[in-house]
Length: 454
Image (cartoon, rainbow, N blue to C red; front, top):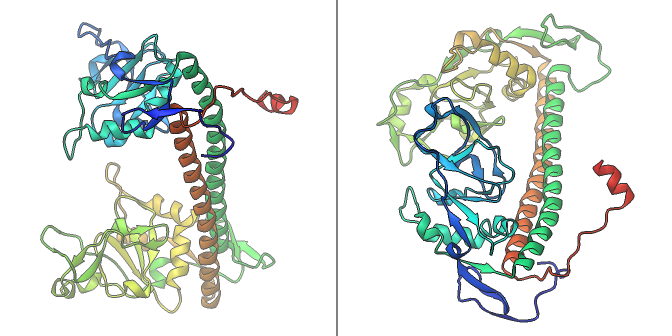
């Protein structure tokens, strides 16, 4: 923690593992002495037409709070939609506790209802609601909840056991001060995180714009242009052709489609599926293998370097070219476009990953409930065809641009992670007394900052 924060003058061992040493004038108590819990539930007699805003476990996180609510009538709500919450409560998940689904309740609508999978903690007169909101989201408290949960695949804790966990008890005035300090400091950190998130969004948009322009307009801004005759495409360089994929490939086929239950081995020929195709790359992060004998019997789905793979079902629009590393692999439920001397597979892959390519593939998908691409329709997609040397140049340019923007986005994500770690550490330090904020006062707003807020 930064040296700008002072420690208390005296500490003593709290006797609580997650608290360690706390200021000597603080005490620690089981949470049940500082709150009530699960005080209110919806009665079964509630009208079936009563509309509620429902919060389930998957819509809550310790860092972001409640991220989503669902509007529904009581009659159509799940049986677990029962717990009533009030302003100042803190909801703590008692099931799948590793998800860290914990959130304070601030100015809720009257009809906000949470799952019975939450323990609703209601601070009493000894526990300041703002302090409780931070204390119960401190990493040490969360770890204590997880440690006392029972079950491997579905760990859970009884609410009565949860409130037996000890928490720090500063004086009520200190609790108020800590809450105000953390409100101010975490808001500053959250603003910085939001700025980094906006930067990532802009970088993604810029990356996509740069790639889309390169594969549909070329790299020379001064080249004469002509109308492509395709509304989504607009103008293209005058010396480029526009042709259907079928005219540029000597083989467009499906990868193996059939039962896969008994074909996998711990090693052998790598077997690519849609989950391996992301962001114009093949990522073999989840390994699947088939035997050489099985692969040899499915010759049409064996891959060659430069082949273009198009995800056929699920995440429509994902495309990647086969690098030398994946030559000889087999594949499942992917459309394989074999390339010729007229088309560079890596150029074609970037083109199909562009806004134009994505729009083109989406426009030919079929099946409302289970969208998929038909090989025969993919053959008809029109693509830009620069001279082959220019295709090589564009493919190299887009690869470099992609690496550049990916690096910038990784840096922004790293910054977000550091800020979140700082936020977590600051909360823990404040609620456990590792820093003394009793003399802290919020900085005075300057006239300029007041104008910015307005």
